[in-house]
Each structure stands twice: as structure tokens, then as C-alpha cells.
Amino acid sequence: MVKDPWWLFAYWEIRPETERAARNQLQPREVAELQSILRVYDVTGVEFPSQPANRSFDINLSGLATNWYIQTNAPDSAFIVDVGLLTQSGRFLLLARSNRVVTPRFGPSGIIDEAWMTSDEAYWKLFGAATGVGGSSPSGWTRLMPQQLFSGNWASPGLMGPGKPAAVRGFWCRVDTDLVIHGATEPRSTVIIQGQRVSLRKDGTFTLRLALPPGSQTITIEVTSPDGRQTRTVTPVVSLAWAGSLAPDATKTKAALHQSPPRTSS
Image 1 (cartoon, rainbow, N blue to C red):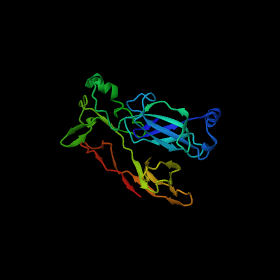
Image 2 (cartoon, helix red, strand yellow; image 1 turned 60 degrees about the vertical axis):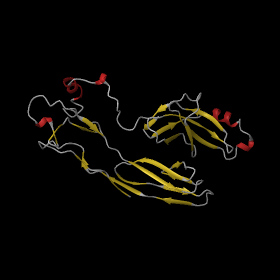
Image 3 (tube, rainbow, N blue to C red; image 1 turned 90 degrees about the vertical axis):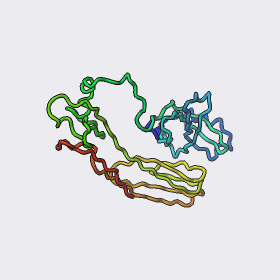
């Protein structure tokens, strides 16, 4: 499943007989250090598996995991995910293959389709309530009433006297905040952030993107040495507070629209 332009969510259920059949293909020497992994394929523009994937990467699964958030950092791309067993020699035994999903692009579409154009009268009939006239906004969204811009200020058409509102389109706006954690360690170390194992690059660097809701959040980062004998724990505390408002001030004839950037501290 697609979570957003940068993340996927995978979940699976493997029947015991399916895993037994896969393990029966292993040689005794291959059973040692057997790993359960997710193999993520970037299949943008290709017919996989008849055509090779553009790229792939593996995620080591911890414990008896049956679901996982996958960071792809690739908006507007297609992906297929395999879950299977990986031997120390690099042999991969497939247990299940996912459907194909496409992450959305980041930002609004630049395509303007004339088929969706409408008259001013039809626009107000269809979207008047959704933009604030006699309706309410969905939770988590700020829907601004249709505005008219003049003299550098924003004014509400409801305060411009009786009659038909000015033929100016309203718009919506949504603001979210993500936290990007990045660092580096020994290439064969183990890094676990918020209970999730993070894949290291060949040089030992790593990056993880997390949603950052308002308030104070404690992030737990555990780094274990390659030999498993030493573990270091770091717990940064990150706070997010919003200032300003995206909604116009309806008590004034002319209301300027202000938005202050989010403040973060750690």
C-alpha cells in the first residue's frame, strides 16, 4: 500500500506449509544465518518480472514481523515487494510477491485539463459549501473561503455587501511536518530507531524519515556494534509548536493572510 510520496506499507501472511517448502530447498550449510527479508523493486516503466527492475534493495526483518513501513524516497514511481528468505551465500527464496503500486508525485499536478473547467455559476453551486459558505472543513484541513485580492490584502467576499460574490476561486491548504534523522556508524553495525531497524548504506550512513506531530516527542535510537557486544542509546527530544493561522480574519473588512513557519527544537 502507498502511504505517501516517500513511503510504502507492506503486510503479509505466510502459510506454514509455504515456508516449510522453501526451507526444504536449503542445504544444511545454508540454514545457518538465514535471514527473513523484504526485497523492494523499483519497476517504474518496466514489465517486471519479464524485464529487470531499475533497482532493488533489501530490508532485514526483525523477529516475526508481519508488516513493515518502507522508505523509498521516490515520488511518482512504481514498486513491487517480495518477502522471502536470504542465505549467507546470497541465495533468495521467494515466499510471496506483492501487487504493483505507484507512489504519488510530490506537489500539485501541472496538467490543466479543459474538460474539468466550469462556469462561475456552476462552481459556486458545486463547491460553495466546501469552501466555507454554509459548510465546515474536514478535520485536519484548513479550507479558506473564496477571497478577492486587492491592494495587497485579502478580503472576504461576505463582507463586500449583498449580491453575488466575486468570481474568484477559493483554495485549500494543508501543512504537515516530517522529521529526518540521519547519521553514520560502522557499516556492519545495527541501528534501530523507534523499534524499526534501519538499513545502512555501504559507507555506514543512514537516513530515516518520521512523521512529526505537534507536541514533544522522544526518539529512541539504538546502535549496536558489529560484534554485538556494545550498544549505545541516544534519545533526542524534539518539540513542534505551530504559530500563526492559515484562516483569514473574518472580523475585519480587510484581513491579511499570515503564516509563520513551524518552530522545532531538540
